[in-house]
Length: 365
Ligand SMILES: Cc1ncc(COP(=O)(O)O)c(C=O)c1O
Image (cartoon, rainbow, N blue to C red; front, side, top):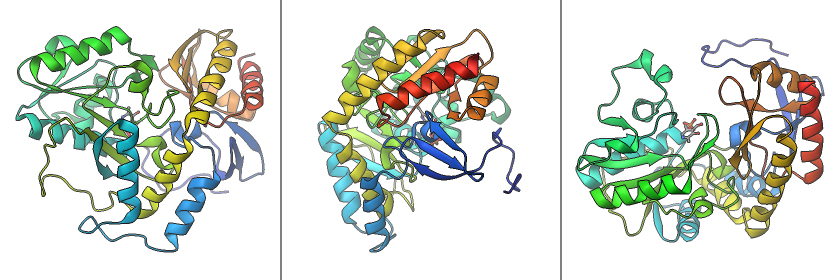
């Protein structure tokens, strides 16, 4: 076991080295097994080593890894078509992460409208690159890196004729798992329409089935002009996407934006398999397991969230509970000082959910 490695200290890592995964289970280098209710921070949506994306990635690995975006590849074309179908007509820009998808959205909105201001929300999280950080409504994360990109405003009251886009997460994830109300989303939609601004939903965390629908906007009933996706899209291979609705301005022309690795054939092949697997049956399962977990978690504190993006507000700090749960064989996360965050694989069984609740109660005892 390598206890420490020469990496820059941007993370507080727990003292465990995972070496294998299978479904909802992780195994460490000492052979201990853990029930994974975090899924790599809402990434491994189909569980570890799910056969569909694993087989698709293997097949593509043996055929072609990379050609650049100067040419077409079949997995990228197929993924764009599948995402367009799911959205109800949209064109994609592919990149490698959530922050990159947000960067693409910010540049697209400025180019498409000729305006410079982005209205985001207090408590939001959109990533750590300069553009994404600039529209992240958490001053403590921004302070050390200012000056940031100008033009960010926080709060719908700032929407006006200079607004290029309103950017929001349907459920604020990193900011404490706080779902926005339907009324709030409807107000954002009508303000965007009134001022000719674009409405962009950051679905990096809520997308690809986690909400109980493929996109959280389908669950909530307010359709945006564009959506960002990343985390769950390729079940753990790096990928990000900006989807722009067919009835919105395309904004971009050749040369406006790019990504060398964006649309990588292996990641896109895995993502195609993920999109096919997130079908009506799995989405119904997400809603059922969500109800079951919510009922059990309600014993522990206020429960918030949507689908399998859930949180419990505790009466004590969350970090020691995350550590105690790990020692008990349960992987969970936090989202703020007193908030436990659960983002299990969408494939978590009801039996596994029952076991997770028992392990969590043990950690809290
Ligand atoms: C809503 C949202 N947007 C953007 C990001 C940034 O994604 P990445 O870490 O892949 O850059 C995250 C990451 O947690 C997120 O939750």
